[in-house]
Length: 109
Image 1 (cartoon, one colour):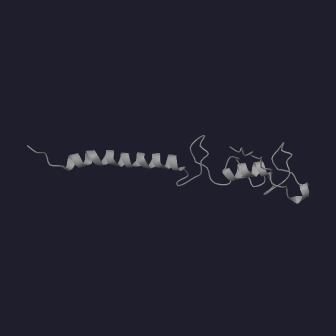
Image 2 (cartoon, one colour):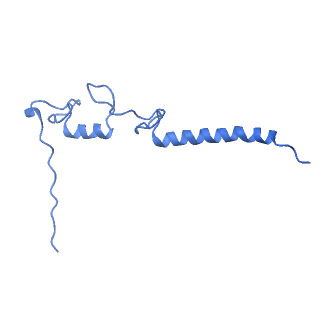
Image 3 (cartoon, one colour):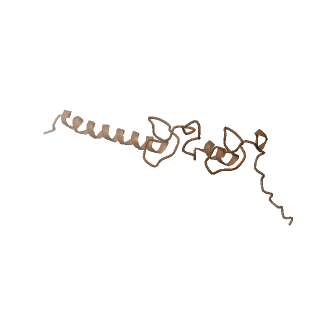
């Protein structure tokens, strides 16, 4: 059986003639896009960088829950926390409605 050798992909060629460098402190890689090297640009695209230097804001809004860095879906929460919040509201409405419905029902004697 023939073996196929995997070749490593090369990093994309730097732009700007290699004169510009990445804006991330301590990084000496050449500029690729939006002031970042290919490595940090990819991290920024995935939302793994807190904020891009110069812009001061992350690529997209992050969840309002502490230590959660997922993308916001609704009401400042990620999908997971939004679903939990929605379920808690639904159960709270049912808990309030149940005693009220029991009080309104005629007592059978």
